[in-house]
Amino acid sequence: MSTDNPVYQFSQHLLWDVDRSMLHMEENSDYIVKNVLEYGLIDDWQIILKYYGVNRIAEIAKSFRELDKKALSFISFLSNTPIEEYRCYNYQQSIPQHWNF
Picture 1 (cartoon, helix red, strand yellow):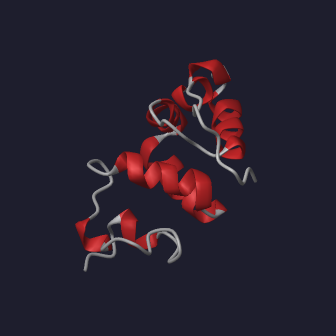
Picture 2 (cartoon, rainbow, N blue to C red; picture 1 turned 45 degrees about the vertical axis):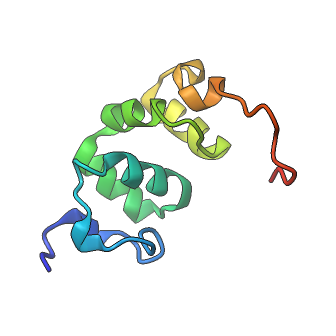
């Protein structure tokens, strides 16, 4: 176990469903960024901000089909990109979920 790998610095609840030794910051950037935006703490956010930078995080987030509304607003504001550029903003489910939290 390499403690210098940023994957081991994330909160325990963030990556509970995967083996951290199998995650790589570059290869699994979509998975990591999505989890941090939706479920991460401020320390988790600072890790990806330091590693990827806000512009790269925004570019990764633009490809998501779905993203929490608060997370979408957060990354759109911080990166100073129009919310319309994000795929999850333009993509609508044809049958919305019953429970809309």
